[in-house]
Amino acid sequence: MNEGDYGLADSEWATAVRLWERTDAPKDSRTEIIEGIVTVSPPPAVSHHVIVGRIQRRLYSVIPEDWGIYQTQAIAVPSRRGMLIPDLLVMPVQEDPETDAYLPAALAELVVEVTSQSNARHDRVSKPAAYAAAGIPLYLLVDRWADGGPTITLYGEPRNDVYRVLKAGKFGDPIDLPEPFDLTLDTSDFPHR
Image (tube, rainbow, N blue to C red):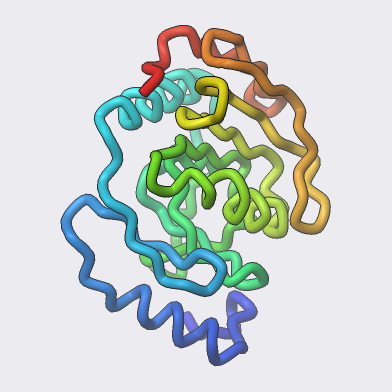
């Protein structure tokens, strides 16, 4: 795959992608490009994995057979200088991708981020702007570190780099995911921290 396939003509972006591809980060850490900066995040806590696992299990019951749910797939958002790895990525299976390293973010139907204390700002500000710019229809933010206690927010209807809040609540409140998912997520069993 050449850089032009993803609109990566900008040499600064291309340099960041090459650095991202060559970064030798510690095991289980997550290496992303966020707003043009290669960022390495430590492995998340066990409670983070529990929440991701519960959401993933529920999503498998409603997605089409030719879709997948991924926890470590990088997606490129060159217009926002982002190479992001959502906690969960739901998209049609790519039978013959041109690269195994990353895919265009525009292929995603839903991304889910669960905040960690060290990277909550990225999940609240930088990543939703990138996901909206890519046109990803739905963004689910599970914010364990929100002021006032853990929250869950579903964003949709992306326009430029902004989402509209479709539903927001605290842990324990159900969150309805619209079509094509048509699923009510029970958040009452999410660990708070």
